[in-house]
Length: 389
Image 1: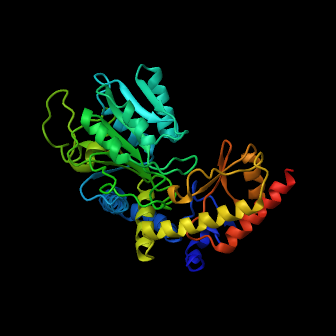
Image 2: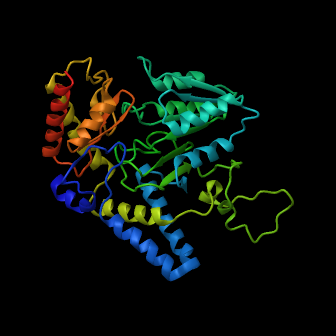
Image 3: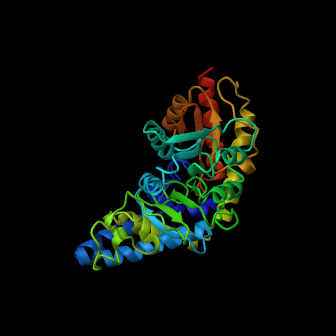
């Protein structure tokens, strides 16, 4: 299946080089190229009337995310990146009355950095550690009280791919005290099946994007929020007034549109949505649903893990955490090494493209990567390690 799929990624030359950058940047299928071209042609033909077409494309993107989230009734707001969406969420919280936010030390920089900064301005930030044996959900629940405005946590940790279990318990704890829950599902979508319903998150906010496992490229992020939400984000764009612009407004009144418009932004570049809609269609045509992608991913990660284990590397140079089974991790294999950057660079010079963060070398396969390429990657990693002895 992977060999047949690779031909649809010819512009990324996935057959000519080993792209294990799947956790950072997956290749785009060729249909994305035609979609970007179509966006330009629509702009040239329709000029300012292109926005009617752009909004139709955006609706298709929202529908694509709704399918991935298994979400029957939430609203989907789109944004260029998760930061603009997370900050809109934060701006809607009653932080004057409830000046406490709960999170973990394993969040991606979008959340980590913004909360650190808010902490400097007097907001109480309670950060629970991801290391240790205690379930992460239990630690989060223990920190939620009636001063808590929100909890922000990932469904899959970006450093080591651990799946965070018990999010339904966190959601229940938030509901008991009237706090909001934001789940960062970026590293779940198209890597680990994610269901708003089955996870008990119908009353939660969920954010994520398509730069990684969805293969949508930049500019394709979303914020899912419950249908009954009546929060009023302080950071709000004029698109949030669509449908009310012609109405009479009282002095000082800030109106919000219906549905997804409540968390809408402002004028954006619609090219990314053309690309996303085309890729969503491609995945459906090829039957690349999350459950199938998960089976492919687990098979690839298990092959990589077995190959790395067989190298029998000096654990002071390279090791992997076996305390959590691969079935409870997301779509990449994290290896610990004090020279992650050097190894990543050397692999790249030898045609094996990976990525790293700190001491973590991350091998991210994708559905277009072949078994032979995975074998080649492990052999090359062994040769690079031998050079470091």
